[in-house]
Length: 460
Image (cartoon, rainbow, N blue to C red):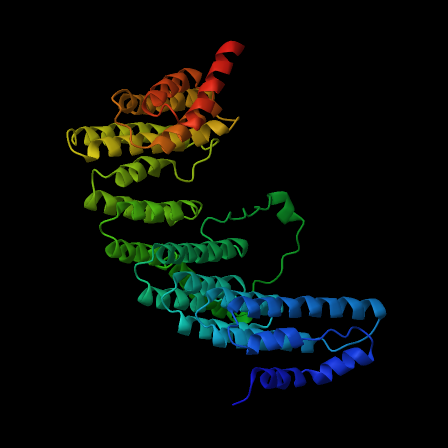
C-alpha cells in the first residue's frame, strides 16, 4: 500500500506541466508540497482541504494579476481546474460537511461553470436529502440564475417529499410561486397584455378634415384579406382571455401550497400567520386579495379565537394600502369593526388560559400595524386622528394586563414602548413604563426608557 509521501508525490507530479510553464515565464514558483503531504497523511480534516482550496484561489488570483501586469498571455483554465480538483477530493472524503459543498458551489458559480454547478447540486442533494436549506439553495439558483421556474419548482417539490416538516421550505415555496406570478404579471403589463393596461383613445376626425381628403374606391374584405386577419385576431383574443382566466394567475397554486402546508402543521396557527406575511409582500398583485381571503377564512374555521387568526383578520383590510390611498378611510372603519369583534371573541375566553396571551398579542400586533401609517408625513390629519384613537384603544388593553401583572411578553412590551416614544405618545408611554418596571424592576432596557421619559418631562 502506498504511503502518504508517495500519494502526495503522485498528485504533485500531475501539476508539473503548468508549474513548468509558470516558472518558464517567471510569474512565480510556489510549491504545494506542504498541503499535499498534510492532506494525504492520517488525521487530515475538512478545514485542511478548505485552506488548501483557499490557497489555490489566492494563487490563481495572483497569477492572473501578475500575468496581466507583465502583459503575458497565460492559460486561465489551469488554476480553475486545480481548484475544482481540490474541492472535489474534499467533498468525496468529507461528503457530510455541507460547508465544503457550499464552498465548492460558490466557487463554481463565481467562475460561471454552469454544468459544474448542476453536477455539484445533484451530488450534494443526493447525499443530503434531509437538509431543507440545500433544497432552498438549489431552487433559488434555478430561479435567480437560470430563470427556470420548472426546475426551481421541481427542487421545492422534491425537497418537500423529504422535508415535509420544514416550515422554511413551505414558506419559500409559497414565495417562489408569488414571485413567478409577479414576474408574469409585470411582463404582461409591459407588453400591454394586462387587462389593467390603459387603452388608447381613438381620435375622431372632424368634418372639415374629411372635406380635404381624396376619396378612394372602397376595398372589399376579399381584396385586403381582412377576413383572415379578423379570424386571427379572434383566435388571439380567445387565447388572451384564456391566459387572463388562468387559475395559476388567479393564485390557485399559492392557495394549494397554503392548504398543503397547514395540513402538515394543524397544531400551529402561527405558521398560517407566517404564510400570510409572505403573501402581503406581493399586495400589488390582483390575486393577493383572493389568497389572503382564503387564508383568513381557513384560520377562522380552524382556530376562530386564536391570536394568529384575529391578528390576520384585523390586518387584512389594510394590506397593500398606502397613506395617500382613497380606500384607506373605508379600510380603517373596517379595521375598527374587526378589532372590536376580535376583542369580543377574546372576552368570550375569560377565565381560560388563552385569554391573556390572545388579548396581549392582538393588541400589540394592532398597534404595530397602525403605527406604520403614522410614519407618512402626507397622511391626512383626520386619518391621523383616527389612527391615534385606535392605537390608544389597543394600548388600553395592554395597560390592563400590566396593571394586573398578567403580561407575559417583556420584549414585546418594550418594543411597543419604543413605538409609542417614536410617535410622540409620551403620556401613554409614561403609564406603560411605570407599570412595566413594577413587573420587571431590574430590566436595563426599561430603565433606559424610563430615563428617556424623565428627560422628556424635564424638557417640557
